[in-house]
Image (cartoon, one colour):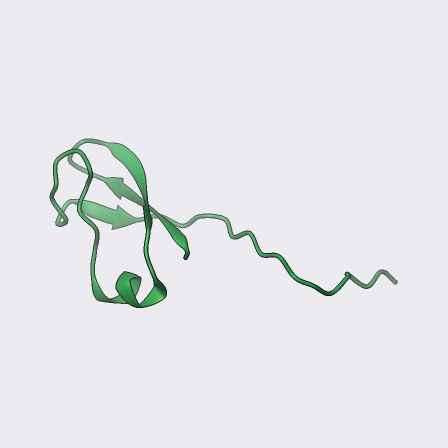
Length: 58
């Protein structure tokens, strides 16, 4: 399940949320400190993937 990063503008704290892609598209999570969703913004984060194929080097 993907981990998404968010930032609460009210308490000025970042937090992460484990959500399915469907959940992420349907709702904004609530801040774990002040429990409000309207002050939360999405953050861009890095992505880590694991593949079974080896990289080709030329």
